[in-house]
Image (cartoon, rainbow, N blue to C red):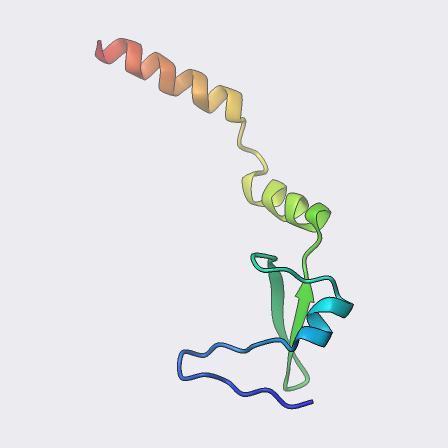
Length: 76
């Protein structure tokens, strides 16, 4: 199966492949290069949560919110 790269660098994944992998509009994909090939991998909800957790690891959201609240009170 052949697909074409648009002038904007976009690819359309054929419907048969989207259906087979249960891909929907808005799904996130991981992209990487391996052995001169482009690899697209659907990201599951669990993978997405883990990647976000890694991104914010070490950040205590509650502590950040409390600090922001204290700063707002101090300004008033």
